[in-house]
Length: 277
Image 1 (cartoon, rainbow, N blue to C red):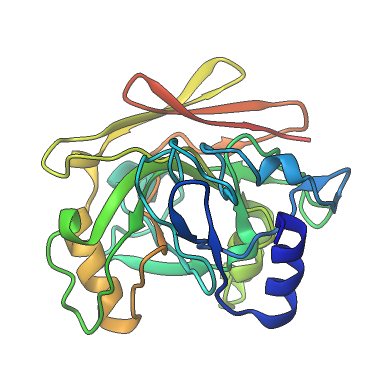
Image 2: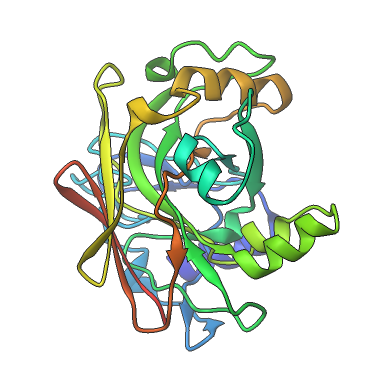
């Protein structure tokens, strides 16, 4: 079964499919969505096959999955959790109160952009903003508030960009309406390559836009840490292997324009590259 067949089958059935990699069996974890090209989705098998550091690998040899050797992925009904207002200065720069509990919102799997995929500026907004975040990948099922230690629940970390239609979000907030369309639209969750991580260590991350640093922070500056985030999410939602958790953005968010190049770093290592088209 090739990548095109897997995509077609998942689109029709929405079920989990098992495929065999070159060296290890894989359970692929998010719906395989063709990337945007020219404003519409078109299939490019080179992004999905023989690509050990890509979002999805149908034939994953020694490089592993998500860039982590020996790690299995799971594909099907993955969820993207996100945390808002988790850095004091970011909450203040948008005129929001600092929350006492994590603010949870979600994105569908269709929001996901793999490493290196471009963001296509949508025609429904004139004010798309970048928000760089630390992203955790879940490896163990958690529910009913039994989150525990993040290092036992998540097996890898990366950086990702929560693209936000700020004009739509502002309009919806004024009306007291939900703002999913401003946060969860197609292609709104860019993700970098994943790395194994040591949860006992502070993580520094930063974003360059056209070579200029726009955001920089550490995990120690979060209002709600990894353990608290996972415990709080699991009070309301079952967290499953393969789910992603965007843990909040620091101050420095701002607009993007067509032609911009965004680069996300974990420490000194560049994990994310995303062009705006």
